[in-house]
Image (cartoon, rainbow, N blue to C red; front, top):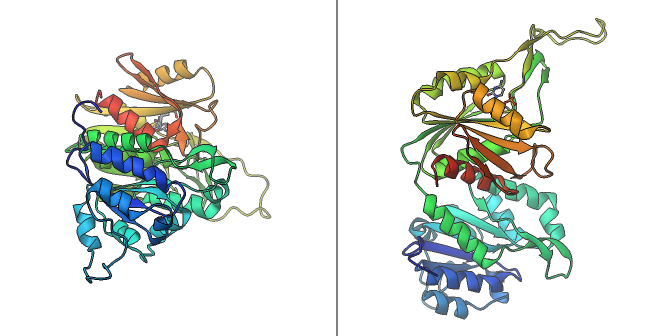
Length: 403
Ligand code: C5P
């Protein structure tokens, strides 16, 4: 390791659960300690079946905590104090069982109890067999943790302890360590900034029970909101109808349905905003005369919908922006990607446009990953690889901040 690590002096709670990958946590602990972090290890009872507390307490220089009490002295371990002490909490490996307990708040061991008390950023590195990883309950629980603002360090695809090959190998200790270093190197660098974000689809009413909409899940916009808040910004998230939720206290969610409502919410927030990021998939057209009562199939011939054009929210803000305000748009393209993106950049008077191509598998509606290129109005192009949406969010703000 060269130079001083950003982790020096940081308080890290390292949670270890009962999986084969627990042996890798020893290396992670070693990296953290070498970087100068103060590490408190908490093991679940099952973790002790895989590695011994002695190794971990020797390396961390602190007794490992596993139970609520030390049996012979009756000393109580305060999960509340630990939760306040921590600057970061890393749970590696995180088994399906611990992830489920974290998602639903089953505080039956010291690790989950401390997790529920933690105010610091939590990182979760799942490790399990491929079928457990793909089970809908695990997928849902991991999504729930994401909605709490936890950062999921995705497992790799590779050979598993079962000798099956698939997704479920815990990320390597060096990579987990790098995630932590990157996190701390940008924490708070957007303090004092106000960020407006649009997300999700819009629904345009046909009648009280039907609408025109699209497949946008809102995941990209919500990840951008979480990233801005993590970096210290105050966020207004104007969200179309999605099934996502946020809990970060610095994110104010304004829920809207139609493009007109989204525009009104943006117009209200934009004058106070330093940065606006427009990720919403706004419907291009809306029914001109939505019916006040349900259109009945039996009572009429096939109806003809007259449509009107919706306002372009990004272009409206682009036209209104003052000196110093930054407006970022997204372009989802299937062909002539660069040309179309650059056309939008200038036509909407944007400062940056984030291009994702529907030709890239893994870069479309509903996925947890994305592959983008960012073009600036100054003519600079940055290309990025396929990565989780929270990392794409980080790349976007790093680009804007010139990092
Ligand atoms: O023109 P196109 O819909 O491809 O532009 C995409 C960009 O413009 C996205 O940033 C999107 O959020 C924004 N947009 C908008 N209002 C619209 C249409 C698009 O804000 N009515």
